[in-house]
Every structure is written in structure tokens, then in C-alpha cells.
Amino acid sequence: MRYFIVLMILAFYFAPVQAQDRETLYNEALNELHCMLKDSCKLSFKKAVMKVENAYLYGTMDTLAFNDEIRVLKNLANSVIRSKKLTYNASDSAKVKQYAALFSVIKDTIPVVMADGELYDYIPFSYDFEDIWGLKSWKNMFVSKLFETRKGNCHSLPYLYKILAEEMGVDAHLALAPNHVYIKHKNVKDGWYNTELTSGIFPIDAWLMASGYIHLDAVSNKLYMEALDDKQSVAMCIIDLAEGYNRAFPANDGKFVFQACHLALKYFPHYINGRILLAETKKKIFEQRVEEKYGKFTKDVYEDESFKGMFLDMQNDYAGIHQSGYRRMPEEMYLQWLTSLKEERAKYENKQIRN
Image 1: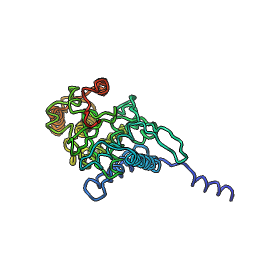
Image 2: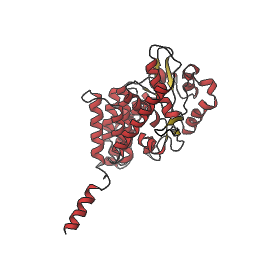
Image 3: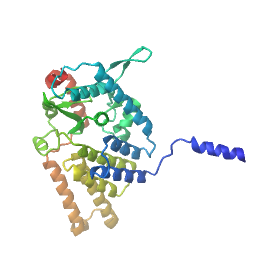
């Protein structure tokens, strides 16, 4: 009997991490991100990303491994700063050196000398052309998946860059294009410039407009090409959380997502993904209530004042989204757009930054 008890105790201590209640994890994550936005907690983009991913992963995310990976990459970036000379001598050269080092860590092959003198090549992250928008698996959008496979997309790669910048104490601004995230920086010599991590190029704004899916109204309404601040970036994480919730609980009643969308849009009202998700959630709730009361769409639905108000509200949301300049970009067109940056590099690359 004593032997059996000992075995039970050992099994308890050495058991793998158990999945936690997903609903609780999602509520805790939303509360934590809200805490950051209202300045009741220290804002940490890394922590926001980890909270989002951990909720979807049932609380089984290896946070120690995640932080270790960040620490290794940060140390590598600092080594690059010490070992490379930058041909930039303006007053903010120290900051620009950090930007260059972060770019190298994510996109460049770096020769590394080990303590025993052995030389090996550090292999950078690459672009994953499979399931680029996480439609098959939401995990494909995660930084933790990027660490596991060394492959990422236009969501995980700029998120990693921003996390590393935060860890190094330097600013990095996320920026948006249709279905796309990239980095914007500003330096004394060149002003604002773009850093594209999917292809490892510094494109000029003309490339962003080249696809035809960035309407001029979308730029003037601040949907795209804006340098986002830290709170707007955390608001993006809240929409990521809500998107993950929809995948974790496909039959949900829409209340959590509705709450998350309103919170995110309070701090980032122009975020098009949040506006679209809110409109889609209103549509879902509308359809659920119609089914509960009438079973199916009938003329009674259109004569019901409460449903008429909900329908007009949805209609206004979708009309506002279109009027703001949003145009849906098909996946095939998106991949062609990304490929154009490499194929027409000479046309679209910011040569001042590359040099």
C-alpha cells in the first residue's frame, strides 16, 4: 500500500502539464489585456501575445521555453550589435543599430563562433506558405508555432520582432495592409520607413499600394499604413483572442467576442479586423435569436421591431466598413502581391535603408 502511495505521489509531480478550463483562460486573458489598456497593469506586448496563445492552447503553452527563446534571440541581437559596424552616423545611430540587429536575427544567416571556437551558421526564420491566415489551424498564427517550426507568416514574424524590440528597450510599430502586418520605423536621416519580414526587404509605400486593394479612402481613414502605438497593438491581440475563441468554441453565443470587439475598438477604433469581426458577431447573434423565436426567416422577422433594429444596425456596420475603403483581398492575390516584392525588388525596395 505504501509503495502504491509513493507511486501516486511521483505520478502527480511528474505528470505532464494538464489542460486548463479554456473558458476561464479566455476570460482571464481578456481581463489581463484590459488591465494593460486602462493603465492598471504594466503594458507588455510579449505578455499579451503569450496570454492569447496560452488560452487557445488550453493553458499548456511552455512559457519557460518561450521566454528562453526570446532571451537567446535577444542575446544574439546584442552580439550582432557588438560585432557589426553600421554605415549610419546620425544622432540616433544606437537605436538604428538595434533595428538592424533585430532584422538580422529574424531574416539573415549569421555566422556564430561557439565557446570552443567552432563556427556554425545561425539559420533565420522563413515564410510558411501553408495556411497563411490560420484558416485550417489557428496555431499557424502563433509566435510559439514560429519557434517550433522556424516558419512563420505576416502575423507571427512582426509580432516576434515587436516582442524582441520591447525586450531590448527600443520602439517598434506594427502597421497594417490588407490581411497583412509589417513594421514601421522612423530614423533621423530617412524619416519613416517600412520593414517587411515575410520577404526580408524594406519596401517603399508604392509597393503597399501596388496591389490595388488599398483604397485611398482606407489610407485617409487610417485603416492601413499607420504606425500603431503600443495600446493599439494590444487591442490587436484582443481581436486575436476573440478570433481564437470563435475557433475554440464554434457554437458560442457571441457574447465574449462581442465584449472583446467593443473593448478593442475603444482603444483602436479604426482596426478593420475588429470592425469586421464585430459586424459578423452581430450577424451571428441576430441569426441565433431569429432561430430561437421563429425557427427560420419569415415575414414576421421583418415586422418585428427588435429584429428590424438589429438588422439596420448590422447594415450600417457593413456599409461603414465598405465606405471606409476596405476591400477583401483574395488569398491568391495576396500571395502574388507578396511575391511581387521579390520579383520586382529593384522597383519597390528602399535602397537607402538597405544600404
